Length: 228
Image (cartoon, rainbow, N blue to C red; front, side):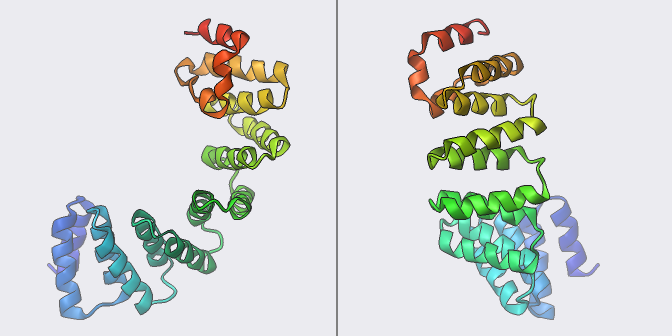
């Protein structure tokens, strides 16, 4: 059986150490083409060898500058290594090669937010939502950025739109309560809090991360206690 086939068998079994051994044999025998460098990088990444993974993904992109998956995985490895600027560049290159890749658009939104670049993060969130509004995480990310940046009306607008897709999701309802309550929309906010508590009362403490002063709001505490 050829080395690559043996490597594939172990890879499918998630035995990445053995897969790595056989893929390396392929590289030594046949030369380092982009695909074998990429799969060696994947093995190293799955073994948490992020520096080695970065090395092989980078070599794969050098062999084939249009290998979108290698660019994306290079960005993920560099993110794990806290090399955020390099990760950002790799993700942007991936998007140049495949502008409909929702996974990389989401990664760019998350990374820009982590790097405190809210305008760029918002842009990528909106780009993602144009393609797929069925991702709860992107709605939470976008509304959270707006709220953190004091765009309170926008945060409310986004979370209400999210409720059209995730009306029975506890987290969305809890966040909706927070944003509406902060804006003084108390009746609507209370209705969302009640629904959230009905869906999953165990998650109620997340509201204190957004609005710590709710600890001292007797009406809200009374409502929460009725569901505990």
